[in-house]
Length: 191
Image 1 (tube, rainbow, N blue to C red):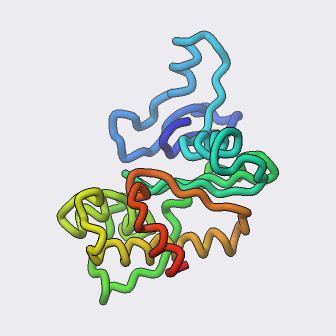
Image 2 (cartoon, rainbow, N blue to C red):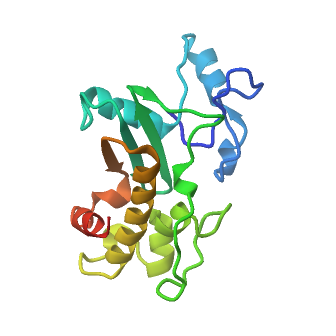
Image 3 (cartoon, rainbow, N blue to C red):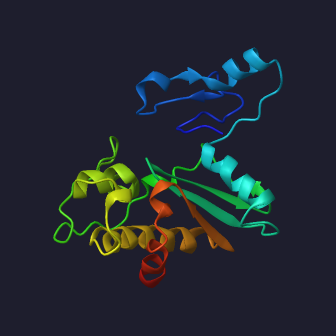
């Protein structure tokens, strides 16, 4: 499992590559090829969130559930959908973190930090967005800070859209931002 974007199309000359990532040292890197050459074994390749979704389905909070969405909210926002026990793929892997959500600039004038879209979901709600907006990392913000209500709103808006589109049996939330236990009640109320 790798951060993305990655090329999962088997017929592509760049299959197994990390592609246009903002992490410059990894841009256009043949990860699958490098691992195959180094280890000398076949390599399965997918996004890090797809690997996490499969792990949760096999050993974690989604055992015996066929239709789930796993989301990570941390340095970025990523997601994977597992339906009938298989990762859902289309032309490319899912880029759930880049969905558009309502951004009321009167209550949140922050422009967003996504290098591609500015104020997409990731640009408004990832860990670096929280730090840029509030001047402190999420882990340093007290539980009663207004950051958490705004974060819950952005998370709930996206979760509602994902629910309307995919109707999963369960949505699992991971990543560094989600280490704040008090955030879950706020998200449920907003959702």
